[in-house]
Length: 122
Length: 165
Image 1 (cartoon, rainbow over the protein chains, first blue to last red):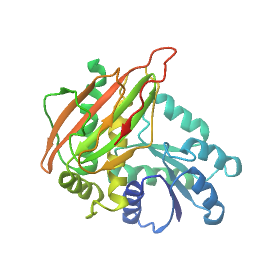
Image 2 (image 1 turned 90 degrees about the vertical axis):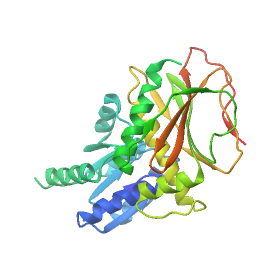
Image 3 (image 1 turned 135 degrees about the vertical axis):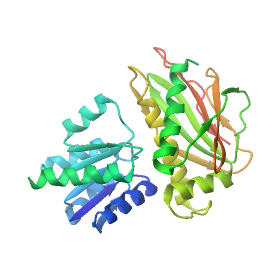
């Protein structure tokens, strides 16, 4: 299972990597913004993406819209401080499958990841 | 400043510290901050735009910041490493982002965070916006969250932008 982490904060990527490690996932690629992620998804071909919203160069929503033009099925979880209902709706319309609001406990993130992957498998 | 903009920051900092750092924060009496000098040596700064404009600063001593960052990251990060600044930025990002989610019927965006490290720096906020300083206490030391925000008005002119010196 290959997972891409897209967040401008290395700290946040480390925290997410730690949670993924506890779930048994170790094949992880990191990107520091949407543009970096777009340059890497083709070669890496992730099975799941965790994407932040507010990032320099290209934000998460723009990345998701771009990515969804060529990939409609790979699940995407948005991990962001944006908690307003309008933002969640905007993210889902862009093609996000699930949503985690920061701050989050490792258990909460872990649960969302498991839930998202189970839905994909079903 | 309208208390509807202060309470979200209080709730947010308590939630972020409880969830990500697993420590409580005691909120002390807010004051109006009149001078431009940073309260402590480390400042995480976020700008706000949209229906609410201004800036938010999370300020702590280098020693306290070090301990909080270590708790946040689960490892020791020296204060001169880029990862230290990144962690401080992410803390102010979560506190500000979470707070703005509690503003009622306001469409607000937050900037990417900036972090300034060093004694004696000044942070200039908009001259037309009072800065409310909320001192906080944790088991790892003192910090403050400084909020200089207000509702945007129509045909906003270019006010003084924030500068760190």
